Image (cartoon, rainbow, N blue to C red; front, side):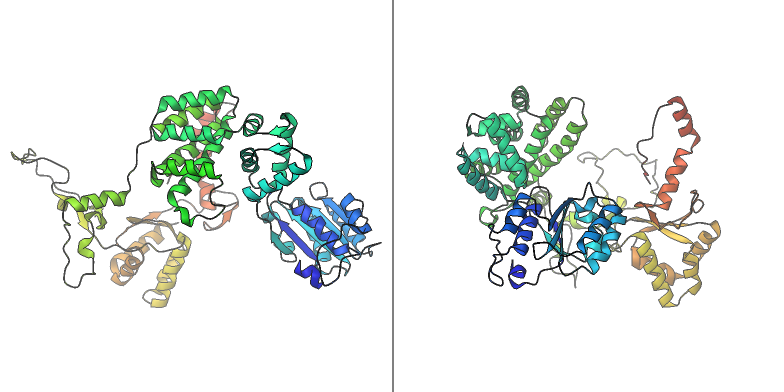
Length: 559
């Protein structure tokens, strides 16, 4: 608005946002404001909506404002036509304006054809692009536009907007009914109006919550509240009874699962964020629904709700794939009702500390608070040395004692130095090690040797290093054994993790060989080679011969 009032308007705009939030509508309003003949220049950005230019844009008949559907004008020829027409000045307006909706549908070649015009546009030309998938718009186009990200419409704004429209139409509507429609629209005001029109068309002259629930087939908040209450009560029978009632009412199981996910999300927010710290739009619930959520949240913990949320999200995937979605929904509800109650680990440690003193004693010069830490905080790892067993001694405990696995913890565990794992992917870590060796000057030839190897994996207990030939592997192992300074450098990077040195298979079994670090379609050459070797395996071929019409859906690399 400020740029319109000051006359400093960009030559191209990119409006991004989800469907139905007003991108194309704002583009038309912007076109009106730029071409309005009665607008007071330098004072008001608002179009008059009375002049001939505004009326022509409103009616969609303006010759100077051209609205194009990007989905049906994707070719280079379409863009060339636009480039030719944009050269000529407007007929009756100040600017010739091109509005391209769903611009991401245009082909790459068409974008390239448009690029020259965007770089050096005529003074009378303005472009307005709208898209729901901004990531598909090339960076060369994005960088030449003023980008505006349209946010979704809040629940309350949609309710207020629908109230104004219903008042003009003379239709009565309950607040709860409008809230249900707004939630179903998921931030899209256009979707909200479409759903509202559907409810009005099938309703009885007024819009009620029951009408919305029955016509749109969505679960009411009271039904969701009863379901969640039965789950928290571990009442499996009540869960199945409520599911049957909803089934008989014609509810869609997939939509019901999604509604429950939204309801549980709100419940987790209420249980996690104190009432005074919640934002206005943090929980999309009315005052009455918020009270019900507060009462439910007081009966449980955020940790338990998150566990139920995880079960429901996994179950929602099963419901979508199942041939009998209602049965899948019932089984999901049963798993939720039978889910074990979780206790925070810190609470368990606190109770243990209250019952027994810490075994750790602070040594002179130790960090403050070390003696107060629970035994579980000590870093331990299982000893890799084999333990000799004297079979001549009986394993039967002495009278008055109890045999447990933890009777001799010193024989099973050792306190070790804990080093943080290096950051970055294996290739970056491998490059850092080579750089460190080169700068130290201890063994210049080792850097060249390491060029024939890769860091395969990094873990707290084991690090895997692979070389593509046995000679390089043996030379690397020899240097580790003979040069303590090199071994010490690797310990600085990986701590006490053991080094596993391997000889890899041939560089790659693919026809177009690339280094292992190069990715193709997000996958490394090594992974593609391993998958191809799996397909070529005689056992796999024999199985596929037995099942002539079979297909390989997925190949997972386990290690």
